[in-house]
Image (cartoon, rainbow, N blue to C red):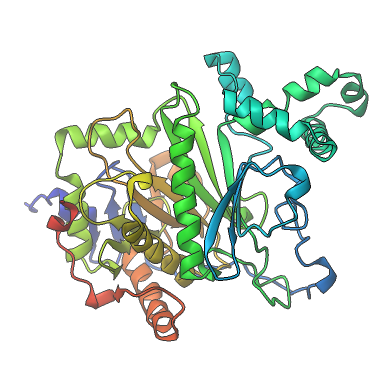
Length: 439
C-alpha cells in the first residue's frame, strides 16, 4: 500500500509521467500541470508595432498627464522636486492640476465596483465634514465646477442615460452624483507614464517593472497609505481589496499602469477560508514557507522579504512575503516596505510588460484578531479557464512552479548585473527558514 503523503508533501509533487500536482495549503485548491501543455509564449503576440506620434505624448488615454480633467477630482498626488525628493500634495483645485507633474495620482474610480450610493443607501454613509469642505472648495471655482459637471455627464451617459434625460436633471441631482468623487470607497493609484520615456512605438508600455526601484517603492507605499485611509471611510468597511490588473486579458480597462483599492462591507471569501484554516492549523504560514525553501521554489530574498514561485494557484506566478512577525501594509516602516517593493518590482521586471498579470494583496483586516500575514501574489494570466476546470474544480496551469523559477531567476541575475533592480540574493543564494516569520 502506498504511503499517504503528508500535507506539505501534497503541496507539490511530480508524478512518474511528469505531471505536477499542487495543492494550496490555505484554500485546498488543486492545480495540475500536464506534460506537453507548456512551452507556450507568455506575452501577448503583436503582429505589428505602430510608431508613436510625439505630438500625442502624455495624451494616449484618460489616465495620461495631459488629460487630468477627464478623471474625477484627484484626492492627492506624488510629485518630485528638483533635488529628487518626493512630496505628497492633497486636495489641489482644478486650476492648479497642471502646475505640477504627478508621478502618481490617487483618484476616485469613475465606475466604482461598490458605489457611493451603495454605502449611502445601505449603511447611511454621508460625506465627512472634510469631504464636504473639499467638495465645496472645488466647486467654488468655475474650473472646478465645469470639471465636475463634465465628469458627471460622462459617467451618466456611459451608464445609459440619454442626453435628453441628463439635460432634464436638476443641478442638485447632478451635484449629488458627484458625492462619490469626494467620499467614495473605490480609488485608483495611477502612474504618470503610459509608455516608457523615449518610447518609439506602442509595444513599449510602461509597467511596474519599467519603473525604477525608488519609483516602485513610492507607488507601493502610496497604495498602503490609501488602504489605511479607506478603512476609515465608514465603520461598516470590513475589508479593502487592493489589486492591479495589467493589460486587457487580465481585466484592465486601460493599458496604463494603475492599482485599484475597493472598500467592501464583508470579509473577502479568501480571508474567511484562510481564517478557517488558521484556526485548525496555526503553523500553516510556516509550512508554506518551508515548502518554498525545501522544494527549490525560492526566487529572491533580501533582509526583510522573500519571493518564491507560488503553488496551488489557478494561475502560475510569484509570491512576495515580508519576513518577521505579521504586520499590516500601512504599518511597515520604510526599510521593510522597500524590501517588499524591491522584490515585487523585480518580479514584475522579470515577468515583462507584455505579460498580462494580476497583482493581489492579502492582509489582515483591522476587525480580525487572528494574526494573518500580509503578502502579495503576482499571477500570470497566460491561460484561459475552461470546461475541465469548471466541472472538476481542478485547475490546469501550462507551466509549473519549477518552470517559473527557471524562467525568472536568469532574468533577475541579468537585471541585478545591470543595476535595474534593487539589491537581493537570487535563486540558490537564498537562505530561508520558517523561523524568519517570527519577530
